[in-house]
Image (cartoon, rainbow, N blue to C red; front, side):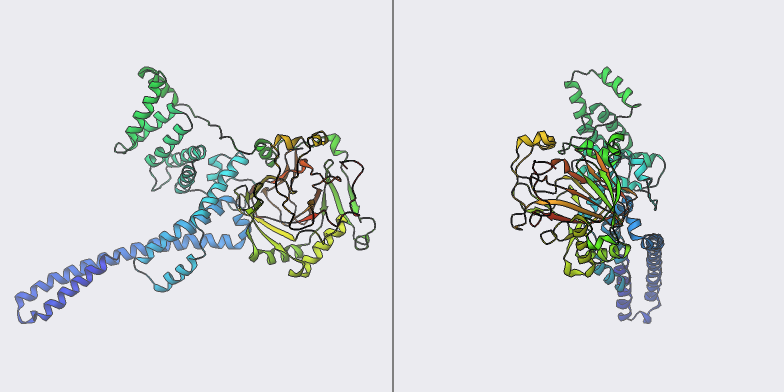
Length: 556
């Protein structure tokens, strides 16, 4: 409300000028000051009213956020485990708090502004808000969630129920639109309209949602419905600048298809009563359907016959000294390739310490470019990771030693312990842990049909600089339970392994011949609800010559 201040100063200035002109010497001139004072009182009241209105709005914000932060700080990871909460946190700090700052900057305490300015350095960016929004869209696809369920916060395993406002739904649709993702634009603009029709108050208008929706429907190839929606847009806002030209353009396209006015009217009438369901555009990932089905718990190929070959046992690795008194609990998860789970691998204390050490070191996880061999970030790997050396803490050294004891493999040539935390919708799409070498087509008969299916390409030796050979095996520790989503899945043979805090899974990436086992292509499914923490050890070939010697055949 800065415009009131100059007015006050102007009025006071007039009073000072008149005083210098010696008004007291003339009653006639003094009467002018009566009206000056009246104007001053009026402007002062308007200023107070504006300040009170602003403070009422700020107070409402503070009360709402006070309750919200009490809930969120009582269980930060649990709260952010709900992807809607995570998205709304990004949106609040990147969009809503700056709006509050602008409001308060109109006239307020310098201390608050100074504090807010300092804190803003740690606020998320536009990229963070957009990333959180796209994560919600990814979860929607993977777990086949309808927009209504997400907007109402109805997610499996969710502890903190939170709603998306009309503005939230509209913003999701806009982010999808700006990314050229018309499929999700349609879903979320439809949800925006539904919430408006249900009477939810909002600054977003029906015309704004219809504007995005009509054009996105056209981009999806449904011209008939685009005409329908554009007519609704014109009815909602007859002054809309583009609506009429869009309608004429859509009609011309229909005329080119040989449609008469009567035919178009019939189709328009029919389209008003039908709900169109659009197909999601094709994705670059060839095994998308099987991967996402496994993430939902569908398509798991665990048969009764296979299950009979799976056992539980106490394992002491041929009477290893440290395992004689306390053997590890081992459970078969899959027979071929052989995947085992070790129970009670990590204690609560060890997990807490590893997370404590890793948290300040976390940085965006990278992948190796298959062409250049350079590490880079990628949209298909959404997590942060840190690498811990034995020297970081005795617990790190103890865990690495335990992995060596259990597997019987050499740890000196293994990579550092990698700790990873997955964010909202965090995932790692299907990938190989090992570096692919020139492909021998004969291996297709050994169960590696997936290599051909995936358009196999050679890639640079990713581990040449290490001098330790390829990644022989993967040891994966689960350091948190995940209420929903976050499974480790193997699309080639239909396995899904779910996180269980304190356990670990282990498999070999290479056959005894040194050739890669392409069946081990796996993925970390998007985390639907919860915070997923893992740590893994990649064990290399060098040093294993006598611990896992070559076999007489190319396979085990």
